[in-house]
Image 1 (tube, rainbow, N blue to C red):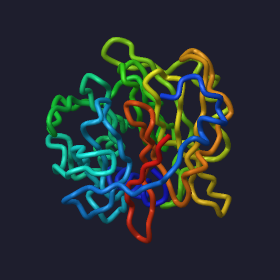
Image 2 (tube, rainbow, N blue to C red; image 1 turned 90 degrees about the horizontal axis):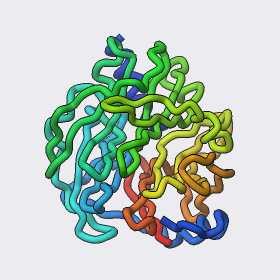
Image 3 (tube, helix red, strand yellow; image 1 turned 120 degrees about the vertical axis):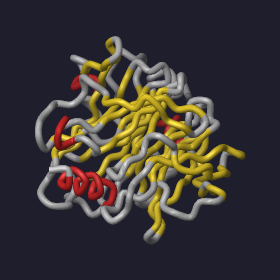
Image 4 (spheres, rainbow, N blue to C red; image 1 turned 60 degrees about the horizontal axis):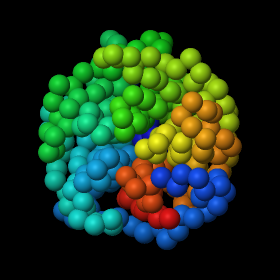
Length: 293
């Protein structure tokens, strides 16, 4: 979440107190043909898209503007560029901010919510998703640093449910962007998660003094897409790709996905690895685009 996106999260907190073996350069250049995605029956902002692991549903949140009640929504696939809006995800939304949905192959839904940050210093939640309904919503334990001013915004769960890719962000003053934002890895340990001891090494070439957030991971865990934004520069956020040989290795040097331009964030990969979806700002509205390879 960036600019308007984390403005909503910050305000809510205050109110609460698969291309497997292609060379890296060739693979990222193979994305082509940005095309806008239609969500029939929906006219509002679409942000933080996530395509479920079976490709059936597109999960997302509406605008993160502070004046808006940010909630989780879903749409059902008609084809690769067309989805039918089905409504809000029942059972998960509150008057607080809910956003950045992600899900594993077993229907375990993860998302960000500011509902209890003032008490728990935590923002990552999970529940069960089935046919547009969420249930058994609970806080994800073992992830938060339990430090005031540190917020975990954006989350991605691996298809097998064993890994969480999320963000440690340090809030700045006012409604500006965070002072820092880096990607973090956690592994599942029973019913909870534990930060990986080698997380810093895994993202050594990914995390920089700029802000890195909104990760998307391939099914085999070897391909990472994410957003980078440097508030000190005039350029908008961009989407990058990094690869590695296997899940135990660090990611290599990230490269921009050159087919994607403009104010763009929050990539999500199709189950076959051939399509990348993301949100883009067009005028005052956020919409979804797709590139393919």
